[in-house]
Image (tube, rainbow, N blue to C red; front, side):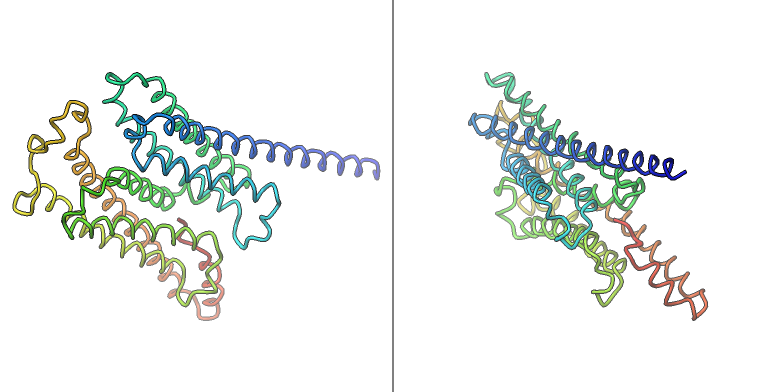
Length: 338
């Protein structure tokens, strides 16, 4: 019997060691694939001035940012510094990979859309196709990391796969697409109201980053109010800010009385042959539509958060006084998952 127990222990230890080795190999493979794809996409664009114009500031920033963040994560893992960071490492990996997925996907969409007008007129069509392919490959690699990390940690119901998590990532993704279209300052520098809209997009993006930080760290015992109420307040503030932007941006971009251009034909840039696909007027329209879409997402997110907080409060009020403290402790740790 002792021999059988020893054999069982060796078998379980060997299987755990094999699983750990597979996890390490898979993690390094995904890191190297992400680094390779983002680096190649950036290098191909940096070597051709025509593609730099097509990529714009947003796509170049996306590839550089994702490359740097992935490199930092790889260095932390190689040095074994995860225990020294007071955060959930798997949660950080899931959040960073999901954001990088949306960032690279937005960069691929923006670059591919801009290159449609360059392919018939430029000899660098093969370079443009390769850049789009490597950027899309980076999106797939980051998405694979999200699924792999959730499956490896046994948290199939991780925040990315829940409705609040999907809504939160969708808000960030739409904001990234908006940043891509407003990367040219001439779209908004002439009107203070339009500059306010850009400030709204930036502030709401930062509020989303704050929400992610609240999920990474255990802030339940450090804040004077419960974390779900903080999430609710930040989402409410973002909803109100986007409501102002959804009114001001179309008003000052398409109303002639406020200096806007109501028709596409009135925009000089749309008459250019090379700008016949995506001109300045199209960018303004895209921002207006995306602002309305993101406002709708924020409203749905706000309603879902309010519903969750209401049911939690209702459960606390209906419980006996003796179990009130236990209920607060049980429901406090980010019960509103984002």
